[in-house]
Length: 211
Image (tube, rainbow, N blue to C red; front, side):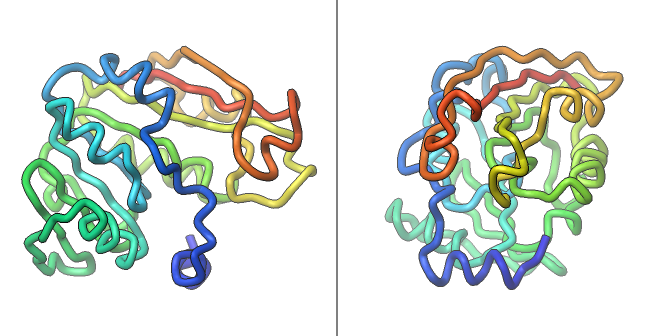
């Protein structure tokens, strides 16, 4: 996870990965996260999904590498967060939404507090293959038994383009979450830019996992 790469993307406005509305899979399947959960959202950017989850009664705990993205979320929603240094990370908090700016791999259960649900729309697919096993292992260390998760991936011929977003095929998803109940619950043609241009070769998938 190269901080310089992501910081330059945000600085230059190259954020085609940002969805200007709540994710369609989240809108359809949010009930599968349960009610009144404390939802971990890794690599959250300034996603509209954060406000969507909060509006439905959840407490949101996001982690984002680029601090400008965290500031932008609160500014664009007209919120003034409380800012607190937390070691290597910085905590921004307002009402039911707390976002940590910094390295996801520096987070701990003690730092984040108790979380009992996961929503991953843009984290797994943002990481190259060499980092994905470490990422999921860290997730599994943060989330308690019984936590529910909604994970979004994309699948396409990886040789067709350089990620991110990276293609994460079904076999790899199941390998990372081996030993946990996981089901593909939805899929749709991939939308946006280079993925949409691939037509039927690119699909977006939603997974339900129970920790």
